[in-house]
Length: 236
Image (cartoon, rainbow, N blue to C red; front, side, top):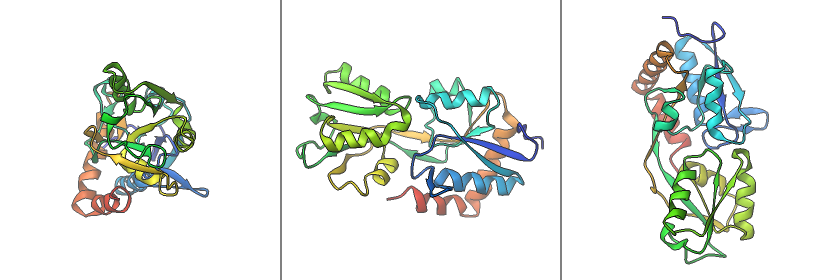
């Protein structure tokens, strides 16, 4: 089968690092769920895996790399949304998650959900699926304001939460559980704010590559590889 990769025999994967536990650097070595999943898929398909780092401030810009040929697919903890489906073709979902709310339990011990944020500023990353959720809360008067950070400024966003300059942060639960492990003042106080399916994306119309990845994912699932990766990386 012709898989329509830009470089024959190589699968170039666009990823917005760091976004643990999906993808991050362990010293000089990339690791995480998406990294190991794509390595397994490439092994199944007989392709060489090559990671390429997306550095834009807006996560949604990562999909431009599919259209301009910068990479063959995107594997970066990406939620499948109608807006993104206009930019890319998504493979079958590999995980379901949802937005979580993180607060500073020392400075705001009475915050337990989005219902307790009416006088607070909530922080989100630009282009993340938490962004429209936060703006909807603001439109309904449920938060005082939304502060948007560049996608790579997640560390700064959590620093601001620790310092008390913002009152809460919203992002997918697996990422938040991972990032606050060494921040004892911060805690995930609410999960399941949304229900989101995550998947690998390929260029619009590249049905050969989509089908190849879907079939590889199915085989990995049958062999138990996908389940082991999910348990290792995405289940706290």
